[in-house]
Structure formats: structure tokens, C-alpha cells
Length: 560
Image (cartoon, rainbow, N blue to C red):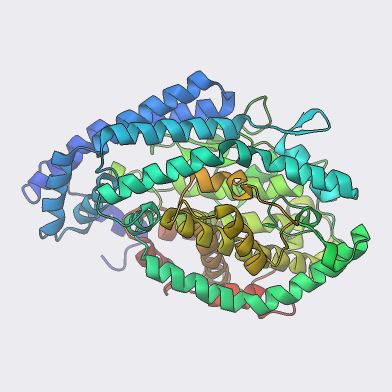
């Protein structure tokens, strides 16, 4: 059996079905569980998708009610006690054991008062609706996020930049009190289930050790600090000249981004000139199909362009774990949205190519960080001149003209993002540890320490609450950074081991069907059969390590 292809070895393990004498009690529980949650989960996912498109309160109410019904199932204490018995017993079959472990985690996170559950879901949905429908107002006109971003990136007016940046923070002032209320409700739920707070509970039940995460982010801080500090000086010199202000007078609104999470465009590469007359959707389709990851059905079911009251960000959702996978975007034909489409489609192809032979509970990605790694891996290509040439045929001379500064741009983007994730991770941890702390000040303390951005004089507002992830996707954001680490590890492994090539930076996988084969069979197909550590080892030959990220973006002074 060891000589069989992985996909066949996997299928050979899937012969146990409910009714087998071995683990009959466990398999019966799993079957009854799936009968209750599979259809309800599908309906809840579909309702949220519809609500995010329409922005209608009644649609959000439907989504909220379905989530409440789903949580009622997970809060059943009798079922949880049965799961505890299974978990404490001996289960030698890895698929049965894995399902029990994952279902146990779902129930463990919901072993608190059902009235409290209802209150959390309703408040969370209300906050979600306000983020979704919020439009920043500037000079008497409501602006979409796309329009606001464009001002911050292109305007050279100090007054306009400041006004746009401040307008983007207004949503924080509108929701921050409810976010703190929600944090306290989540903490109450966590303590009822035996944890110190919600942040700790979320990490543990998502199979991450809090101490390990702290150590990793401390290591990343040390790894990136010197290089980032040097890069920040380069950024400041550029912006000082661009805006004709001294370095000491640079403010957050000069950094061309609401949060300084992507980094300003200080290098002379205008990517938008390549994309402005192109069809972002068709480029996405063409690329993924070229690497043997077919995406037509995903695009057909997705909602990709701006609409009034529509959710302004982007996400991918697997509606039913049975092939109905959708993306929500607000596409403009530019580099930012090209990168976003590649990112979201990375999530989507992962979900699509999970083995349909797996039990329902295992038909999902191994972990948030593993699906983020695929999204990050592909999202990076939108600024890679070799990828742009493979898709748009810009020519060798143009590739050579922009390749050095393109690499520097990606390096800047990565290091800026790594410092931003330090802020989010540490802020969330403190917020859940002490929600009554002076969070406004603590936020800016972190921004100044890790991003080296100065707080505007006298500012004391809940700027942290403008970031939607802090309110609605708790203990999630750090996985973006872990995804970046794994994306680099995968980039090296695929280039050198799968394709047996050497130039990691030049390799964009375009037209390489072996890449799709590798990802399908050794990364996507197992779904949640393995925990994330085991999946990383099985697919790359070693544990997750920051060394590839460091080699790619920190130690490299020239193109790899």
C-alpha cells in the first residue's frame, strides 16, 4: 500500500462506515451528528452569503437565527459528556479519532448558557451589519472602501489625506462599546467552559498552544526588527520628500493605507498600468486552470463586483462541503484586486479539491493557517513580473526593467505586514485579558513599538475598533502571518522538490500542471484528516519554520 499514490492510500482508509462493529457507538454518534448539523450549516452559510450581498437587516436576521439554531446543537451538554467519554477512551482508528477530536472541540467551545449564546450571536450579527453597511463620509459624500483607499494612495493634499484617514476610523467610534460588550460576553462564555478567557480558549480549541504562539511572535519580532527599522527609514525618507514634510512630522495618514498594513508604494513600479484594461476574473480563471485547478464553477457561483450596501471586503465560503464554493469581492481592475482574487481563489481551490470521499466533518481545511498559506502563496503573484509576463506578455525587457524593484516591493509588503500582525496579535491578547484597560492608548503603544508610527498628538479614540477582524474574527489574524511563513515554505518546496528548479523568486507555477497535482493530492485532498502540524510535515517534509520566510524576505539583499 505504501507504493500507491497518496490519493489511493487515502481512499483505502475510508472504508469504515456507520454500522461497523468496531467503534459502533462512536460511528453512530458521528452519523447522528452529521444528520443534525450538515444541512443546518449549509443553510447558515448560504444565509450569511445572501446577507453580505444585500446588506438587508432581515437577511442578517435570518443568518443570525440559523447560527443560533446551530449553536444550540453544539451546546448540548449530554452530547458533550458522550464526546468526553469517547475522547478519554481508546480509539485506534485514526479517522474515527480525528472526527471525535474535532467534534469535541466544536462542542467544547459552546458549553455555556444558551441565552448567553443567543446574546453573543445577535450582538455579533448587529456589529457585522454595521461594518457591512458603513460608508465613510468625506466632504458630504459617502465613499466606498475602494474610493477611500484610492485617496490615501494617490492624494498629495495633507488636508485630504488626514480627512480620509480620520473618516475611515469613524466606524470604530460607532461600534467600540458594543465590541467591548461582546468581548466580555465571549469571556464569560469561556470561563463557563473552564478557560481563562476567550482568546486562550480559541487558540487551544483550534489546536494551537498559546505559549507556542507567544514564542513564535517574539521570535518573528526579533527576526524582523532590524531589517524593518532600516526599511522604515527608507519609507520615511521617501514620504518626507513626497509630501514635503519633515520626517518628524510624518503622520499615520501619510503611509498610504488606513493601518500601515500593506506599506506605501515607494518603488517605481506602477502595477495598475498592467491590469487597468484587463479582466481580473478571466486572468484568475486562466491562471488556475493552467495549473490543473479548475475554477469555473467557483466563479459562476460567486459575487465579485460592488453593489450598494454590499459587504466591502472579500471572503471565500464553502457553502455545503459538497462543491458549492463561492467568493465575495468588490473588484476593480487593478493590482490590489488582482492580488485579492488570487488570494481568495487560493482558499476556494483548497476547499474544492478536498476529497469528497471523506466524512463530512473532515471535508474542511486542516486549519485556518493552512488555507491562509495557499491564499498567501497565490496572492503574492500579482506583483511578480514573471507572473505578470506569463499572463499578460509584457515582454522580457519590461520584466528586466521592473524585477529588482518588484522584489523590493514584495519584501516591503511582507515586512510591513509582519509588523502589523504583531500589533493585532498582542492587542487581542490584552483586550481579552483585560477588556477594561485603556485600549485606545494600548493600541497606539503597540503601533509605535512595532510599526514605528507616531500617534497623532492628543488623539484618544478607539481606532482599534475600525479593524473589522478585531470585532468579528477573534483570535484569527495571527494565522495570516503563520500562513505567510508556510507560503514561503511551500514556495521553496514546490520549486525545488516538485518542479526540481532552483530560482524560487522567478517560479510562479504558471502552466505547471504538476503544481496542481501536488497540491490536490498532498495538501488539499486530506482535508482535516491531519492536524496542521502533521499536514505540514507530510506535504513539505518538515515542521513549519520561519527560515524560508527569512531567506526570502529578510536575508536576501538580491533576488533569490
